[in-house]
Image (tube, rainbow, N blue to C red; front, side, top):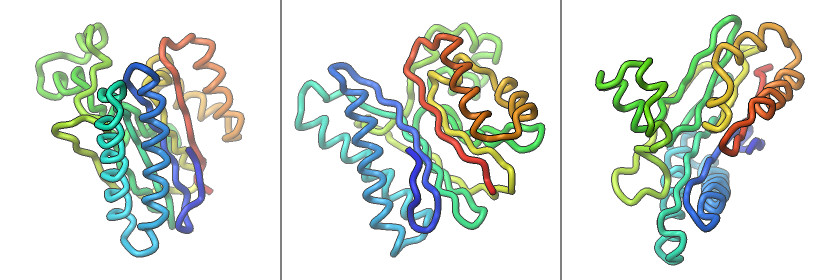
Length: 219
């Protein structure tokens, strides 16, 4: 999702999980609930407070829906949101979608993957090389809709002109390396061409999962 809101730009990606169309329902419900909550809240609260209120509202909406519809009881979704206003980018995140900022020759990942494999790497149980072949790479440790222990990351990042901000699901970054994102940005100066070439490359690499990409170049 990409939308104007509160005199700023709101970018969001939700990647749902769960059987019986639960994943699709979860992602759509999370996005719609978050947007409605944020639109109402940002006029009277700080941006940080509004994002956090909206994250909790989206999570609670999934819990309520899952409790009332038995076949949706295990639905959950990732949610990564960026709100950009006056060169400040506020980010809230839960799950394993990612937010990248590409600046010059560098790429910075602002979010931390809420996955079992990433937890094991951070604890020193697995090396980065071992993580590449770890069989449970897609197991989430945190997401909207989980009944116990839900949490979220929150941070603020100062953006600069020509920064490229991308939010992507795991289906996208599983088939395209960070190096490709960075190298293509150096070659392709027009953001719309850059964006569509990324999508084309992802399709060409035949991802095993659904993929989502939203992005903007800072003016």
